[in-house]
Amino acid sequence: MPLGTGMLAGLRRIISIGTRKPVTFDYPEKPRPIAERFRGGVGMRRDALTGNSACVGCGLCETACPNEVIRIDTSEAADGTRWVERYEFDLGRCIVCHLCIEACPVDALQVTPAYRLATGNRTNLIITDDEMMTLWEHPEQALFDNEVSSNWARKSASIDKD
Amino acid sequence: MRTDHEAPEAGIGEEQEMILNIGPQHPSTHGVLRVITRVAGENIREATCDIGYLHRGIEKLIENRKYYQGMTFTDRTDYTAAPAGNLGYILAVEKLLGIEDEIPDRTHYLRMVVLELARLYGHLVWIGTHALDIGAMSMFLYAFREREKISALFEEGCGARLTTSYMRVGGTGRHDDPPGWLDRILEFVDGFRIDDFDTLLTDNEIFRARTIGVGMVSAEDAISYGLTGACLRGSGVAWDLRRAQPYCRYDEVEFEIPVGQDGDVYSRFMVRLNEMCQALGILRQAVAKAGELRGEPTNIANAQVTMPQIERVTGSADGDQAGDMEAMIAHFKLVIEGYSPPAGDVYMATEAPKGELGYYFVSDGSGTPYRCHIRAPSFVNLSILSQMVEGSLLADLVACIGSIDIVLGEVDR
Ligand code: SF4
Ligand code: SF4
Image (cartoon, rainbow over all chains, first blue to last red):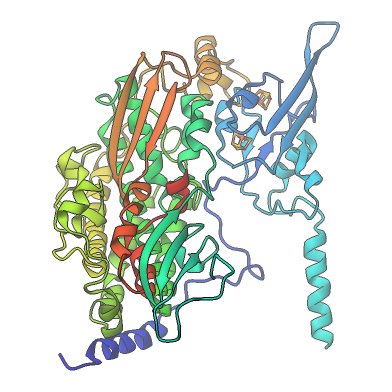
């Protein structure tokens, strides 16, 4: 085979590949379609009757989580009912395996397609059940008022000016 | 860089030796691998691997978790093909529990589908980065273009693009295959242009010059170093665990074991390229079989390991029917205690994209493993690097590292 034949064949192939349709998306200008089963941030269901979180404080999610993400404190009222005093969720440790969701016996924890969970301040990452209910209700919104994204917007505006 | 501060003794034109560190932050060492080389000019006199920069103690983490939790860490060993790690772990635990014969056929084929997708997924990273190291830039882009499609399939079927956590002990958990997923896999298989990679590299003169006759490993050496996967088959040994010790349903699908002859970088390249073709063939068969079995259960009916259906625990959504007490107790027990395999030990090896991936468990009868050991193919295969590159040129080191196909998440664990 004369020298360079293989490379010429490769070059021809590269040119033909150049005529194929692109497979990329214009993210973030256009949102990417998300699969139905996509494991996003863990949301909390709001109970329709009480308007509070549907969690009953059983603590199974705390046990099932491999990374100690969830922390629950419960208390008992005088009439013997159990209340969730505090429900903390450390987004920074969560690997989104959803074992907690599989463990919840009352379907309080919910799969959401939310993936805009970034923040510029890591203490924000410890969220409570209120924020998790927001996640469940509005998974399409960014969870935090994002300083990072507003900075980005400012920067691109100044670039436009120049 | 000289390690001593004395003036070099040798004069100009004479050979001087020096120690050269390659990595841990070098783009072509595929992660945080550090190779300490003693070089004389361009010639490598000695090369020693220094590993451990990505050590996270995954084995210990697994030992401190219940069996069902440990699965999430296996995504992070070979993260270029996460389902392969999941499968090795799950099969080992199933063997330890003695339920491996109860697994339904449909589950086996679904696992096979995901595993062969993972093989393509891993090999695409390899071909992209290996070619990039050798200087073929565009290959990287084409490999990752195809890989993106598999990511989308994983997202659709397993719920995540990279860390799939797809399988569960005793089946596939809440996830079987979503409607239309298998058809889209077939679409992907039909549209997969393996000839792109073939045309661009196989006959490319530069690629051949960089790889033929480089990094030779004889069959005896390959066996005595314990190499597995394409590193072993590239040296002419037709050893594939899918054939030698069939698991899932690999004895019921047809495929060939590609073997190389020369044991050089090019043979290993050809073996992996052919393996990608074979994976496409297996995918077609497995998708067809899984499609035939649609509607059958994917989880075993063994209440010791399978979670009860969540509707039975929660009751109906409108509250008309309360949850089933028995199911709820089983659910609580499974989450809090997990399952306790009988005391004993078990080793289960699977053919992962990188070679023999084995999980060794020692159980003391409790809900957490007493000992977990991961026989990582990348770690064992990397051991031959020193011998492979001794006496060769520095540039060949990069080709050799690429052809062993390591991923540091698995080497260091
Ligand atoms: S998704 Fe996984 S890591 Fe995150 S809180 Fe649930 S169990 Fe823990
Ligand atoms: S498992 Fe569900 S109900 Fe129990 S504590 Fe967690 S969120 Fe609440």
